[in-house]
Length: 319
Image (cartoon, rainbow, N blue to C red; front, side):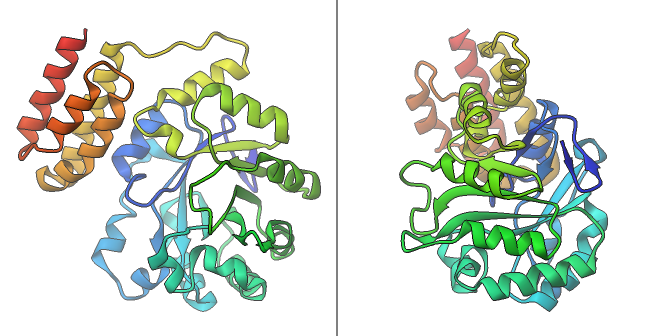
């Protein structure tokens, strides 16, 4: 799998996700086999105004590379300037044309850009001229049922010089509801000469294998399916290679949850770890006996020591 000059070890990619794909999460996904991981969305406006919170999102470690940096914004010149600031932070630049969140839409960025193909062309052209790094876009199938224009957007992107595209085949109005239309990924692959990365509803190794088979995509991007489940990557690689899929034991789950917790604590300190790890730890115990009780208790923790003790006690009783 190659994206421009970047050669990846396998076709499994971990998605950029606001509030999720921070440094600790990326390290966990990389350790479980992800060929490429992405930062959270980086605001071009935040970089322009030198926002500290924006800069923190670029913190990285050598271990997680190759790293993709995802940018969002609505102004071509500002995005071009942002690329110059961040291109040394990673090996690939991605432009977000798919975020459906209202705050992003109101600014004219994310999937709002799907309503203005001419602006999409100007943005990609400006960014392409600003960097020699591999350049990709991540986008949705359209704004709503009446404006499904993913093929038009993709061809514009190719004309302006992107090296690959990632399609989440839902419209902006669907948010994450309904079912992703994988046939749109197939249509896109059949119409483009550059790599196509498929995204949407990849919650198991079997789903990943099926997406490859049904769409012919070159790679897949795992989003929500990786929450508390980094094993999905190695499981998919095993399944694709004809090896049996092995489910993690309770001991393995605890080891990874503990590792994630310690990475978060070392990266962000106790206060932010409390907020971040509540959701992650709830995901790590999903499907296990007494998980509902654990979730109720973990959301009441007030110190990281209490959180750590609760995690250990849960798995001690689960073993």
